[in-house]
Amino acid sequence: MDHIVLVGASAAGLTAADTLRREGFTGTLSLVGDELRIPYDRPPLSKQVLAGDWEPHRSALRREADLQQLRMDLRLGCRATGLDTAERVVTLADGDRLGYDGLIIATGLRPRHLPFGHDLAGVHVLRTLDETLTLRAQLQAGPRVVVIGAGFLGSEIAATTRGLGLDVTLVDVEATPLARQVGTFVGGLVADMHRDHGVRLCMGRHVTGMSGEDGRVTAVTLDDGTRLPADVVVVAIGSVPATEWLAGSGIPLGDGVLCDRTCQAAPRVYAAGDVANWPHPAAGGRVRLEQRTNATQQAITAARNLLSGPEQAVPYTPVPFGWTDLYYTKIQTCGWCPSDATVDIVDGDPEAHRFVALYKVDGRVVGALGWNNARALRAYRSQLAVSVAA
Image (cartoon, rainbow, N blue to C red):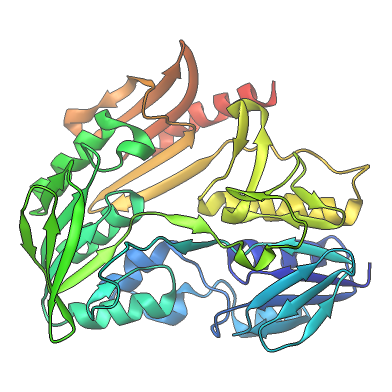
């Protein structure tokens, strides 16, 4: 192969580029990203960057000098708009066409929107660094903040904004924060933590509308008639894979790019990161992981498999690992933590704010969660890795 194109200039795309060079690829690498900024890390956006503890440059994944060592054709600020797998061509928004011998799709996600309210000033989503900086600037006025969605991102935003001393309300349709991610037992502990820090919770409630004056948001309305005054609203109701540009390309699409177990979606086309959907034997079906660790691990596998060819390609069977930081608490998960699993405390004590919980389905351990207990969790993570390999 002489030319490999990487579409998506975040953690997965950059890791794939780095892996290709380390594995000996000496041809042309084109890295395409729709943002003008050099590749940066996303987890700090809702925490250190939003809080103002980090300036934007600290989130960069590589210094510009390090990027130059990868000898890449950087196409930043240029969105991919189409793919022809028969001709092996990626079309860009500026009309340019990039022919490729190998392609890695790492376009990630785009935020979900509510069917209303996004035309009002003060209503935000948070996915990019520029969106984070815009929100951060508005927080300096001391606004009343309503966060819609209490998953990982929404909970982080609520914790960060409350840490700035702001009036914060967190709304979700579920009974507790993180209910879909880790279940209601741990979700209840997160709810208590939010309340202890002064966040107002509206759980089990649907948002039915937003009000505004002079084009700026003033309130959020819930399905029980409650009206929450708001100067800033952050919508964090999840994301969807960024695959619109692949329509009509022949690439199989569903909940993301549908790959085989080696991350291949079509001949000489692989996917990695949040956009990739592949069969995982330990999960009993297809999975798509929105985790920072997975973005790196899967990009390494996809890049190696692209170079080695399908005959030598290896299956991608990771033990999922993720984390979140809320106030002074670090919550880490490994494996799967389904909301309907049985949760057993095996180390520490929730009342001491330090424990490890195992998640069991039909008596079988499928995942583990550590609450301020990274050292103890490490042993269970190793056990899950052995179980997946078996």
